[in-house]
Length: 376
Image (cartoon, rainbow, N blue to C red):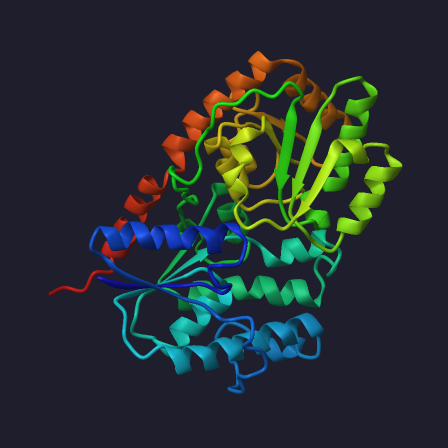
């Protein structure tokens, strides 16, 4: 079979999806499958001019809104770039962004298009203070899900929690499949090490949705209790200056290292002890599986797809969203008891290896792709 993996972001950019798909492609190609990547370069902006029309709703009722207009222009750009660059046919197209899925089905109506919805753009915008719940932008973006259901051949997502979320916006939620993200076992693996002072790490974009402000408040309480630690913050984003100032005011700046963006954090993630990320929303939370495969103890929030990865008290600790006291208590448990921390990390590694290995995900995808194999 000849399969196209169609991304929105180029694979060299950071992010769970764009960094994962090239490894999937490599696994398939090594097994004799024909598979290629396609994406929209950053430089392609404002090129598309073809009118956009949806079958399930009239997007023009939302026209004039900056976020909606940008979304539609990006759709037009993707149409323009796809027509320019794709010159062959494929047996199956696997899209990884709503714009991509809809464009591919518009241009290649006779080709099966599988669409994996990896995250919720509208929830991210709400949590980051960019749009209001139930506003114009929210209505437009959630209407896209029904359009996807109407157009593509198969809807997939990455967690049962996110399937439930999508189910509110489609007609037949039971038809949505779930295939969790997969991770290369050679890329993410434990490394023997011993740290005298517990080393905490988080990897994320520095935006309000990730809850790093709550983490800093909890770390301040941890310091007051007399527990030594170092927090490694890998990632960049619009609120980095605000977080750095907050760390200074909380008197924990000396305990924190702000690295900024890093292309391959997995290269030295295994040398730390605890991964902690108090997200306010996560469709799946790929970085938790990555950290588990690197042999770290996990602390996350009881939200989205995170509880599907962390069983509280067995392979990590879950805390409520925005609960500083609960997060502080969890940090005290894992930093103060190396044996407890090790046991959590060992079970987390075993669960992640069995559930989120790339080999397992490749087998699940093969089953989906083969269901669209053309009869000879």
